[in-house]
Length: 84
Image 1 (cartoon, rainbow, N blue to C red):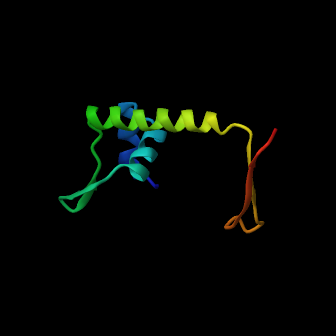
Image 2 (cartoon, one colour):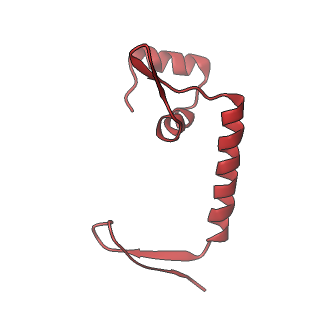
């Protein structure tokens, strides 16, 4: 996502992490208001999303040692297996 000079200055000034900005844009719902889309991270939403991320991190650890073979175009999964 491109940021205006004003947005860059405000994000830097307010200590907002770029990774949090990207997360919000890609994963949180937005509401159309005053001719723009608005994303708000409430405490409730933050806790809920953090819980999802922790569960996903546990799932990633559970699948350690898994290999996926993908065709050269990167669009077709050929096979998947757990490496011993």
